[in-house]
Image 1 (tube, chains in turn purple, cyan):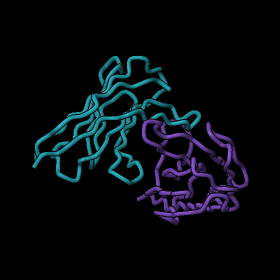
Image 2 (cartoon, chains in turn green, cyan; image 1 turned 90 degrees about the horizontal axis):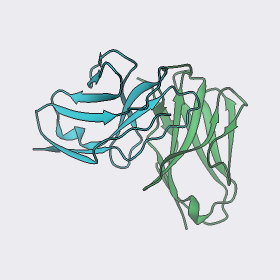
Image 3 (tube, one colour; image 1 turned 120 degrees about the horizontal axis):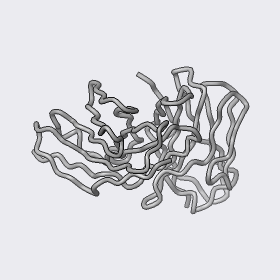
Length: 113
Length: 110
C-alpha cells in the first residue's frame, strides 16, 4: 500500500511563529503536493513539486514556502503563521503521468492562535 | 477539469449495495473519472478510477455510461465504516489542481 505520512496530526502555534509541516512518501513517487482544506472552500493547492529541488506555485502560495531536498520528503513552511492559516493541511503524492492516482496523507490540523 | 454534480446526501442500509451517482456531462476525451472518500478529520482516500470501461477492485465497482457523461460508484456490501463523504472527480491530472466539490455524504444505517 502507498503510504503518505504527515509528521503531525494536530498542532497549535502562535501568530508569527515559523511552522514546519513534514511529509514523507514511501513509493518513490515523482510528484508531491500540499493542499489545504477549509469548510465550504474544498481542497486548494498551495505548492507542488515534480522533482527534487523543484517546486511550482499552486493556487494559494502566499504566506507559504516549500522544500524538497529528497525525493521522498516534501516540507511545507509557514514563514510567519497567521490566524487565517488555521486549516487542515493535506500532503499528497503521485507517480505522475496521465491516469495516475494521487494518494493523500492523514492530514495535519493546524490552529494558529 | 470537467465539473461534476453529485447528490448532497444519501442513506443506505448496512449490508446493502450503495450506489452513488455522478454526472459529468462536460467530460472530455482524455479525462478520467476518479472516486475518493473522506472520513471525518482524515485525508481523502482513493477508491477507484476509470476512463471508459467499467472497473472493479477490492473496495468498489465503477460503472461509466457509454457516452461517459455519468457514472455510478457501487459499494457492494456497505458497512458502518463506509459512512463518509464521497467525491467524484473528473480530471486528466494535467495540472494536479484537484477540484473536489462538495461530494455526497453517505450514511450507512444499522
